[in-house]
Length: 165
Image (cartoon, rainbow, N blue to C red):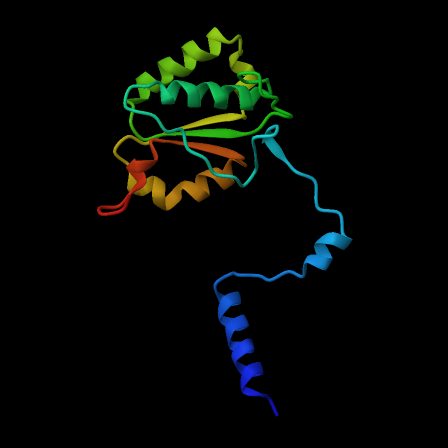
């Protein structure tokens, strides 16, 4: 026969697990070697991390993002940070006309000495101006189908539904 305390503990565990919460005994961590890290930018971030470029309007955030994506796609150091290996990346352009984004990538790649063939199969662009809700619905599919490891959503707020922030 179960005690009330046992039933409450089981209920809490079950509801917590239903929410995706997992409790691990720290002894297991202490006893076992953790899996290796998979850094995208050494000592900064790894696969699965999220981040944002935040600055005022017209502060060249898109240029910085595109330069980062270009360097990740070819596996070259960026602003003094080591890129351990090349990554498949995607720029989700929710704001600029296709031609403006095209010009920026063309000019930026040339300015840092990246040849077009170095990018083939490693850097993808989704031109989705005025299509934020479609991107919101299908982004996972787009990323998985191209085996993308880092997606730059530019700007993220264009994915918000009315009333979200």
